[in-house]
Image (cartoon, rainbow, N blue to C red; front, side, top):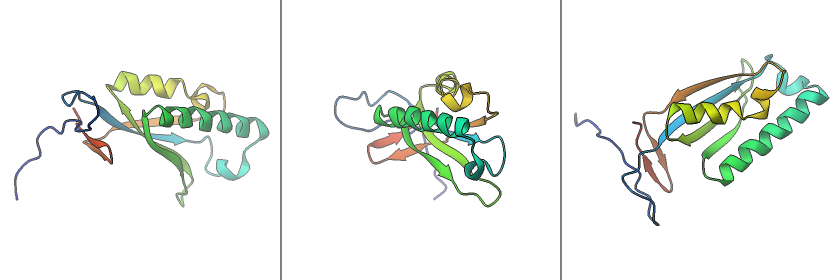
Length: 126
């Protein structure tokens, strides 16, 4: 008790350098209006399908640990947990998202995680 947690390094096996530090980031995709999930236009739905394909590809590549819509009573939004080497890389992921490149008025909040634990290992926050 009282012992601080030191740096957590990636501990996955299989040829991955255990000293490589990876940061986790939480992405929150905020739609242009609170009822967006229920009132999408055809153009917005098309953009969301592109957005889903983009995030699915990132998940298949191992950059995204999880993503999906959150049914918050105050209004649904999207959430994603991303592994990136630095905030700049996280911002590049955001900027390439079809939802963010669209003219529909989405916003994204990105916050660094203090640490990330997955079935494949633990990742440092620094």
